[in-house]
Every structure is written in C-alpha cells, then in structure tokens.
Image (cartoon, rainbow, N blue to C red):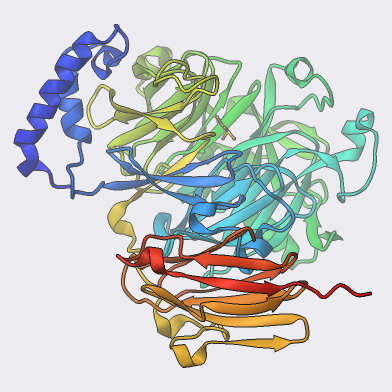
Length: 632
Ligand code: K7E
Ligand code: CUA
C-alpha cells in the first residue's frame, strides 16, 4: 500500500474523524479504547486505503454456521468477497450447477471454524486454504488460484464433530483433525450414553494431501478415549512431526458437561507423534475400521502421550520456533508454557507421572516452563515472531501481550513481569490472529481480534446484533486499536496472507477447459434430443445466448452445458431460468452443467444475471414447454 501521496485528503478525513469522535459517548472511539488522546488521526492514517489503492494483506475468516469463508483486506478491513464452502450461495451460483451440487451432497450447511493455509518449508505457500466443518465432519479445500472450493471430503469415518482442525503440517503433508464429540465407533453402532467411558471413542485423523493437486484423502486414525478434543496446532523445528490438542472432558462425563466435565484441576492435552503414526501404518500395526487404518495408541507405544494442562482448556499454540507450546485453560487465569525440548527429554527418560488407559502421562512439572498470569478466561495465543505472545481473554475482554521465554531469573521469580500490555476489546473475544503466527516467520504488524457478544458496537439492526472485529496495531511497544468493523456471523479463527504471496487468475484459459461439452463458437452449439432427455450445448458471450430458444415437452429432462467463451477479465455471465430455480454463474472460460425436470408446461424466459454490457438486459431467451396431451 502506497498512500503517502494521498495525505492532504487523508488529513482532512482524519481531522473530521477527530471532531466526530468528540461527539461520541466515552468509550466508543479508538482513542478512548486505548486510553490515549489524539490516536484517531494516526489510526485513520494507518488504516485508510485510498480509492484505487489496495490492501496489504488478505484476511480469510471463518463463517461459522454460515458454512462460508469471508475475505477482507487489511488494514482497511473491507469485506471483499465471500467464498461459499458448505452451503449454497446464489451470488456465485455455488450449489446450483451439477458439480457443486454433488460436492455439497445431502447437506445444506456446515460449521466452519478454523481455516488453515497450506505451507511449504513452514511458510505459507499460497496454494490452498483448508477449512473444517464441525457439524458434518467434513473438510474442504479452497484453491487460492481462483478462490473456489474444489473439494469437500467427508463425512470422515470414525470421526464425530470435526472441530479440532484444520491444522496443516510444515510441508502440507497432512491436515490434522481431532474429534470434539465421541460416539460408539464405527459410526452407526448403538450404545447407551450412560456407558460413555467404555463404549464411546474419539479419534485423531491424518488427512493426507496430495502434494501436486491438493487432493485430500483419509490417511490414518488414532483411536482415543472420549475426551472431547479441542483446539490444536502442529509442531515445527524441534517439534517437527508432532501435533498437540487440548481436551476438556478428562472426567469422561456424558451429561451436564458444564458441571461434570469441570471436576478435575487439570485436563489432558494430546501430544501426537504423527510421523510415528505414519510408520505404524506402514508396519501394519493397525486394524481397519470403516475402511480406515486405525491405530490403538495403547498397543503402539510412541504415537500418543498425554500432557496435563490447566482445567477446561481451549487453545494450544506452538510458537514460531517450535520449542514453546502455550496452552490455556478457560477456567484458570494463566497460560501454561511448555518446553518441547523438555517434553522430548521426558519421553526419552520415561519421566511419566501416570498412565491413562495405557498411554503415558508426561510429568507436568518436568516440562512446564511457567504459568503466565495473563488474566481471566484465556482462549487462544498468537505470536509476532519477535518474542512476544498475545492471548485472547474471553472473560476479561482483553488481549494480553506477554514475553515468551527464555526469561530472566527475576522474571521467573514473578511471571507478572512478563505481562507487557493489555488492551480492551469489545467484547468477549474468541480467536485472535496474527499473520503467519503458525509459520516459522510471522508477519507481525497487525492482530485481528474476533469478538463475540458485541452488543451495541454498531448501528442497531434488531435483535441479532452485528459481531465485531478489531484491528490492533502491534508494531509498537503498546498495542493500539486502529479499526473496528462488523464481522459476518459467525467468526471463529482466521488466517492472514500477504497480498503479494498469491496471484489469482482472472480468466480460465480456454486451453485448460477440458469439459467435453464446452463450445467455443455458434456452430458447435446445439440441441439434441435422446428420448425424454434434451441436451443443450449453449454459449454465452456479450450479449446473447446461443441457442436462445429451446423447445421442450412437459416431463422432459433438460441438460444445459453452458460455456462462457469470454477471455476478458471480469466478464461474467449468469444463467437464471425463471420459475425453474436455476442460477448458474459462469466465469470467463468456464463451462457449467445443470439438469432440470420440466415439470410444468408454459414458456419460461431465461436471462443473464450479471450486468455484462450495455445490452446485458437484452441477453435472454426462452424455454418453450409444450403440455402433455392428456391420455384418455
Ligand atoms: Cu476455535 Cu470458536 Cu471453534 Cu475458540 S473455537 S473461540
Ligand atoms: Cu451476460 Cu449480462
């Protein structure tokens, strides 16, 4: 972003902002939220992206139960596109053509929680974005070449409640997944929930990624006790080949979890050696369950260990060096920092405090580096790559910045000394994200706080109030809130990618179109009848469809293959068929197919839905459907 030459206009804007905030009730302006006067001018300058200029980063944020991924720019925080994943989206025709209908299957929604960017050598490589579906145990791959969902895998066998994902390994070997819920496995088996501890299981799944195509497949699984796995992260550096998840139900309660799963002072995190899991599969130390090789960690030592963490934890985040792992318990006011080199030593020395169902529990006191008193309700931690960590505090509604180890003797004696700064957010914050926090080289610079229960932060739109995100500048010693915006429901985690890390395509090159039903010129188009099936090869170009009249009989099945033959950027055509629930959007160079049954006679106009030219309105045609002659 280069906007220095826009400074005069900018100053005027900033001045206007300052005078505006003067009229706001206290606590509403960015200046007030950081407790410093005069910040609005500089905050406006830092987030203003002038007309014609572009943002520096992409923000990909989860759409929760909207089933979608939203894309915004940073620092403007403008929402620039929606990537539909697990639900229909008329705006892009997603879920209306045969290919995406098939991908969505029988489900009409998903619950997207944690987007994960693909990596090469521990850095984002800008190829794919993986997202999980907590509701229907699926995982999807979005191609960043065209920002489209290209694969949905699942429901994953032996996996129930795909919440603890999508955690991408250093070279995108796997997306790792852990179950939030446990059920009798394989799925479809019945057991009384009262027999939860005995009959129910969770699992960790290695979703294998094809390094060339990105195609996902279920690689292997580790069967676990029914512990309600929560958030996780993958290792790097010294912890390369490992992954970590917290869990919140060591009690193995099956009802009234609010009370029954919060009895013990500590819960167990999973420390998974996924390289060892891979080797176990190779050596055949598995049993097949529902078509998947499944490892029993009690029988295959070295695949799984447990680590005691503060009660009812949520996040567990590996730092950019891969040595430090921060786990936070929602019900303990601290972040526990573990040293992976000590974890490795403890495993080697068999320094275990007990075992849990045949799997060793690493001695907590041997591997803990310290408990940082960050405040109330810590959830997730992110890193700036400069030795600082940032933890979201749901209960306290703040972000706490703290210093990572190594700590001085003085700091160790009183870890309050490593708590460097706190900034209020509005209000109860869930996730927070710093670009590249899960890579070896975070971008730092900005932090986005994704808040919940943000009542009153935006113009009232009725009972369902807009959720809230705040952009926090973390480049200085003190954090500064520089922008606040609404967030589409329902945000969980996000990923930030440098804008120049990718170069999305603008048209699908004609040479790449391998659809056998594509047509590129009027003579190739046509209507062919085989019995009751009428197959149309149609072409769309400014500003007409060829053919633009299709004769049909009531009861026919109509198949339309439509190619947008344009090769100019942004020249999109749509195909809407009136009263037939058909809504295709065809990008330049793309071919799409739809099948419909002509259930009623009459004449049904079709038209282009995307404003493509001065004669866009004229881009139309007819399905002429003759009635069946009543059989007497
Ligand atoms: Cu990652 Cu919202 Cu699913 Cu935490 S979760 S807040
Ligand atoms: Cu094509 Cu409007």
